[in-house]
Image 1 (tube, rainbow, N blue to C red):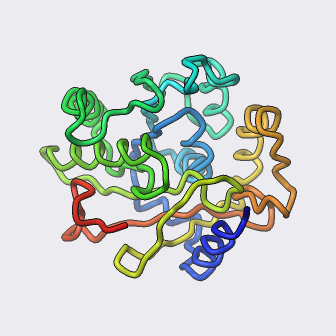
Image 2 (cartoon, rainbow, N blue to C red; image 1 turned 90 degrees about the vertical axis):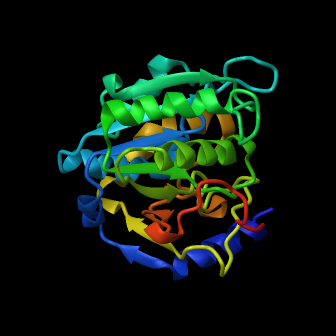
Length: 251
């Protein structure tokens, strides 16, 4: 069950570990999350660090958190999502909910894609971020990949350059997620979040622990927020090599 996760863990452990001060280079940051909680799970530490140094952070939730049975997932109401964000220093007023149906976020060439791109462009024009945090492309999740495509397209049509940094929502987690790491992709790196790890754990415990039975400090689960691994995984394309679709990206 943990074979792939151990491989990913090994890749991440070999990548560069940057200090918390790395976020000083990010400035005002727009976080785009395919589902509720993916933002805190993937980059909650970075969000807390950004707020510590006074940078503006805004979070756009694309998916509505519903299950395949069209029922709301417990713990994913807008109120509870905002409460979770507040635990990492993000005001509820900094949350935007597009309420696209989970599992049906439009990918490239799918119905609704252009409209979703426009909605994200509106957020870029309003917030004017220096940096966008978006999920990894190849993570074995259709909504995550669609979110990647939408954000890349919207940012590519922006009238000013925006730095884009990818976060891994399930890095080190004991899930079925498949994050593809190859020599042809940008090198991953880690962000040291130990000074804010307790904030992240508090933000996540209220939802994930009762729903999925994940004991955050159980070493067998190899959870990202385990105290032994107080870091998050990121990657970034050189500006000259940023793809704006998933064509030519390989497996």
